[in-house]
Length: 342
Ligand code: ATP
Ligand code: MG
Picture 1: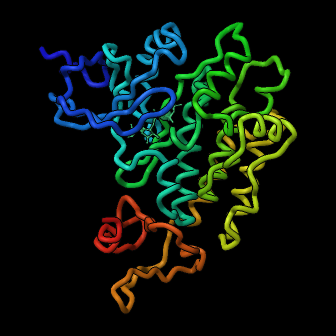
Picture 2 (picture 1 turned 90 degrees about the vertical axis):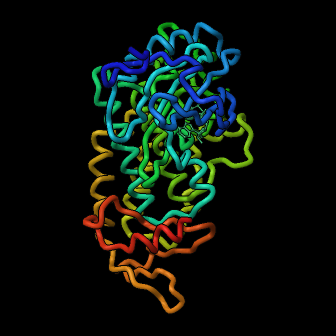
Picture 3 (picture 1 turned 60 degrees about the horizontal axis):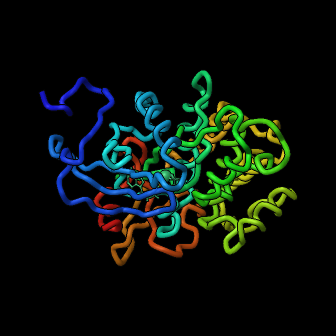
């Protein structure tokens, strides 16, 4: 029996030889590299994320690999499926997400409000799932580059459970691990103050607040600021600028801004749990579920006569129209949308 031909859901240890020879580098970042690879047996693309073992030391990654086999058993629509690992190159093998990270998507395309609200809601669903486990599975690395986007512009949260607060861990070392990944904007202030408590679920809620801001503004928080400036400003209660959220916005956005502000509250006890957040984002994303009919304009462009003028706020980049999984979600001209995307 082939090593990969195992019972469904079983964690696999891939060999380099299990992949076609042409590995396409998708990204190189501080913590390692991501490749698009093709599994010979499956004839399917996968993502292979390698870890730079010099960054945190071999022990750190040995521990990750031990734990990843249990994380890989988790299955939920909004979290990244992990197929296995490839110990030859210290890498995780997971589903390949054709639209890359939300971080890149926000920089290259202007998203409309319904899509923004939907992505926020899907992120809260994924996080609620992780936190609903007993004990809660903390992400501790939630950021827009760890929210990946599939062919249909739905999201999956990735790289959860890779960062840990270990028993008796030195806080400086924990901060170093986070900042080494370029995560400074997502770290709640209590982590770099004197608080002796290890991070809990409210750490992730804070990061989620920053993610909401990024989705609403399509900007990077604290752009141009040094790590020290961010540390100082955030510990003094400063947060990304709310006025950067476009003025032309749906009335429901005020509620979303309020969730965002509660999520990044200075006092971690005041941050709402994902079990509450998810109910609110669900209600907000429901508002957008019934778009108006789509028409063809004089020059063949797609126009949508919705009740909401803010569906079509200013377009600064390429616009990705709202897409549904099935026409029953609302009326839309699928062909026209696909031609706009190509
Ligand atoms: P961290 O190691 O802290 O998670 P990061 O998310 O910035 O940092 P990677 O996880 O290595 O770095 O991912 C880098 C980039 O690779 C992502 O931003 C995304 O564009 C791409 N990527 C990661 N995983 C996948 C995947 N499963 N499918 C497609 N692209 C991916
Ligand atoms: Mg990542």
